[in-house]
Image (cartoon, rainbow, N blue to C red; front, top):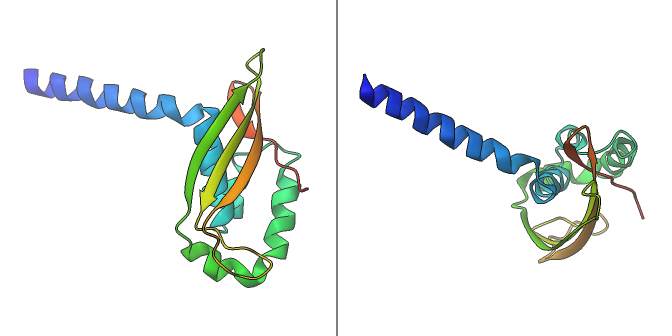
Length: 132
């Protein structure tokens, strides 16, 4: 009985630790980027603002011929700089994405610099994604 209580407490602690890191600007930016660059456009939209979903849909329409290659991509995301606003409700993340397919030529890029603007809505971090 004591072992099962100890195991249950350990499992709860692991779950809390795992969940607590999933709502940071960095983790949301990483999840969004990996979804976007692997053609999981519906998944990417779960990490962005309502206004940003149109930009994701535009990329999805533009990328139709590259979806198969994109789904195979081994995306790596490395946050280089995170700037949190003074009020704590927005952030800017500069990162490097490796393994992404360039939609213009279909080639895999060794690295792509990216900058994501994050906003906090209802205590949840979201990507505010706009096309340049």
